Length: 303
Ligand SMILES: [Fe+2]
Image (cartoon, rainbow, N blue to C red; front, side, top):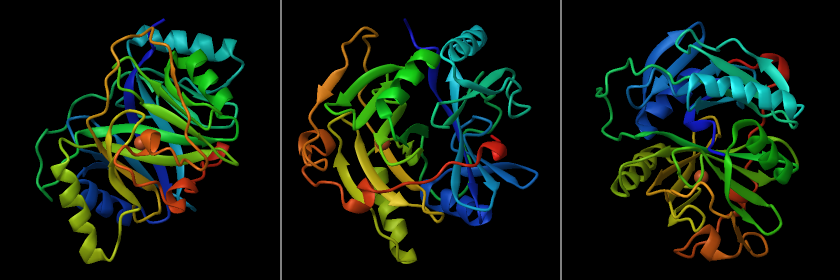
């Protein structure tokens, strides 16, 4: 069965200081503000209407992850599957006027996903500002108390395919219809939350510009640069102004076989197997391993 989701659509967060997050996202990630709706700031790094949405909130927490459906009909199928799986449907009204059709549901641990028709490509592809340019928001890693159940629910609802997992289900990586090794992943934790959000860049050279831009702000990298084993992608991690963990990535593996048996890898004690976590050898610091961003309360979900 092919995935019902093509790729990541957007990410939305709450932040106590949206202006500062937007400024940081522009200066250090290279996306730009494309509009405002109420007290929400819309950002994009390409022609898409919005791919990073920052709401004003009481805390710095994750809100909704948008997933682009492969077709409008696929959204009906996701709705049917969500109901069959006994998961909660949060809304069947699109979160934004720019989205024609969607279904929003929650996993059993409370991660909220909006499976939607693509945002229109109504923004200019080129824009002024700092020279760094990501291609798009690429993938998201969540945390869950029961990551095996989480992966099962994402497969049952959206048809996302398990590309790889660790022996004890500590981490699972799942792919969408575009074949990228992972569009969503999940890490075992004490609770449901967000671990990191990843922006894709054109080349490793971009990482240098990003890291250098942090120097005058007295900020430092959390981990990397390196090359993950799972996904074979280049990586660099840092915290943004609201302590969201961001990854810059490039060269993600593409898997063309929808029927590939999921790979099972041994992560080693405390992620010590460098062949899985970083083929270049440097293991993740505890700051990376323990990172956790909470979820917005059920009542406040807005995309
Ligand atoms: Fe990642």
